[in-house]
Image (tube, rainbow, N blue to C red; front, top):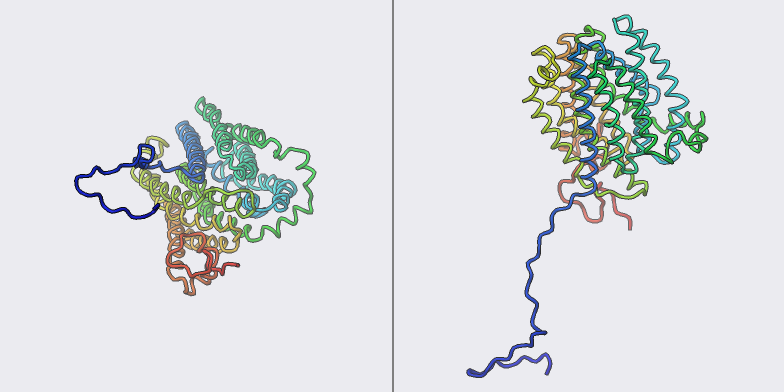
Length: 467
């Protein structure tokens, strides 16, 4: 019978073996598949490398300008950029963040706000800032060129946001980095830094418009959507991100503005060269974090998903630690041989700023993930804490220690903000967590890896799963 158990063969009898066709196939050793790079990791690497290359090109521009003795041009670049960026934030707040994370109506409102409100105010701000700084020895021609560059870069934030929402990071790389090459050649041939940056801004504007194609800002269908009514409605949509951007500016630029009012253009130019290295590093790290932001926005708005996971945060934090170590070791060479700045002050400034990188990365990882989830209020609270911490430190340190105090204040603010975040996460049920970061089951826990067991029937952020 089929399936019956046969008795074992008697000794001496030949044993039956199945036909060749029925023989079991030999067991093949399963090959281990190589670990695939997720799309989030790939996008994070492209975005980070883009900003890294852009930072290197900017550093080369500043290094060549410093070697040619253009410290006045560098000082004008740092001072005017910081002051005019404040005008844009006071007028429009977090419009670039709302543009990258908002829906179609919010994006149309931001476009109208830029054309009817932000742009005219930045033009008027250029006149006021130029009048103020011209009394301190800054040249009008350089300040006007830098002002146009700053306005162009502010508009480029919207263009690059359009490309980022479509995950076109390679096009972004070409637009951002390609424009710096002719500028570097012009400076190397003896041209002024302000003129070179102006040429780069024009090339970047045209390249981004070309890559956007049908989504270009100059298309008639987008121009017909502009209206003063939409421009006014953007202020209501942008109320939380307005405070966020103002606090972010205050924490990142307050020391620079305060220092520019207390020291000479020569000292400000030296500090500006060092600060530009730090800002290039932060832009690289923020670029990796913005990939996670875009992934959350696309998933929330049904535009498609990205295999995000935690790759963007891991790449950014690992890169921050690496940059810190390299900057500490290579600080004398960067300041002395590359930038040709007099030691030992600038080397100390660079070391202090470099130590702040890992803390800054952790804080921005939390806030940008919250913005991607449209939790604007929670992100704003964290950035307000950062601004509130740096204010007393900067007011005490900058007048006493000058540029060294400005670098130390930046480090202290990032470290203290990171400490507040860590303490709030450890004390989930404490008053500090509830006051600064909102409820313990709020969006903050969704921005960081969950630790511990999750109750049955609940989502990752602690809410009851709908049936």
